[in-house]
Image (tube, rainbow, N blue to C red; front, top):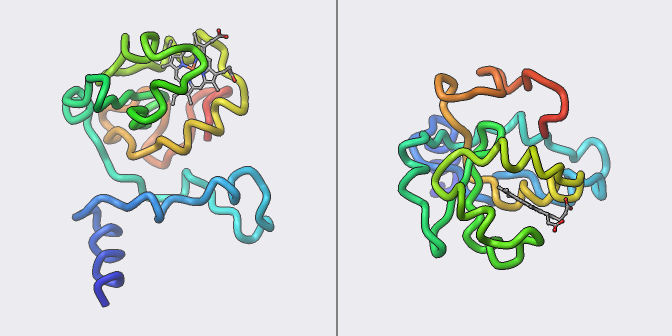
Length: 141
Ligand code: HEM
């Protein structure tokens, strides 16, 4: 019952979705059969504003925005192959240009999903429409 209520509240965006609601990495990388694949873009991610993101700008609490999506990279900072400082330069803010400019690999883009916690509201987006269609090629779906 509690979980039905939670699902309802999450659908109505009254409470944030838990990470378990996001598709598993296995599904995304194709280990699971096609039928079981769930595209992340089909999910209702919690909406997080740039103002909310701005509060998370420290080494022990670091969120960044890349292509209109919000990532909590706190745990990843120390493991980032490019070092923590390059990410910290954008802590609590948009890091798209820096991320794009580095030319990250497909594996890096897949890895981002592990840290995905939400997306910007439509009026704050630059790269994606309200229906989550990407506005240019080369943007992770
Ligand atoms: C969730 C976000 C991020 C993930 C998952 C990620 C992941 C990775 C990975 C896996 C690599 C190794 C090379 C590759 O596979 O492309 C890498 C390299 C690098 N990343 Fe990131 N990255 C993220 C965000 C950023 C941001 C915001 C910057 C900002 C400048 C950045 C700068 C770099 C640089 C400079 C390298 C190159 C390291 C080198 O080749 O010496 N990354 N990143």
